[in-house]
Length: 241
Image (tube, rainbow, N blue to C red; front, top):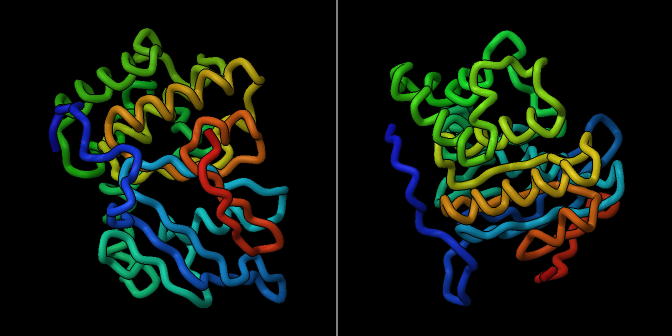
């Protein structure tokens, strides 16, 4: 691993860009209840896509399928030439550890660890030395305006502060794709606005693509494109800016 924070290749895709992640004909049921029905999505390098839809529409299931957390019953999901629907658990685990970053509604920071240790954790799990991992983590905390929280535990932080620490953790490995599931859902409007702005700005600077699940129009406004999920089916609305 490296402490280099320079951007990876990315940005708004051109008409000739090759997709980084594609899903086609994806269906997934939980018992007799269908969550996705022939859903599709394409993500380009450096692009930010908002996945919108009401509660229970299937948008979180789509995100979990795209990230290789849930295997679809039907369809194909391909990431940079790898078919995630047939990849082994070991291959998927490696992708989630090195190529993908994750941001959840409630942060899911480890309460017993300091904020610095939380951000350094993905690097440590990938074999980075403690010193190098914590040095990189400190840089990301500074970038997300929470460097002063390094020694504090998540329980000593406000909701907005904790979510910014979680953003730093999601980006610390310099992933190619960040999957964000309702990242502002537990925050007030002011803190939510700050978190989504910091997330999208930092992702664009580092060249990461982002799939953000949300039901909030103000969050979707930060994306390059919007995909709506309703009753398990997807509809691409194109640019939102």
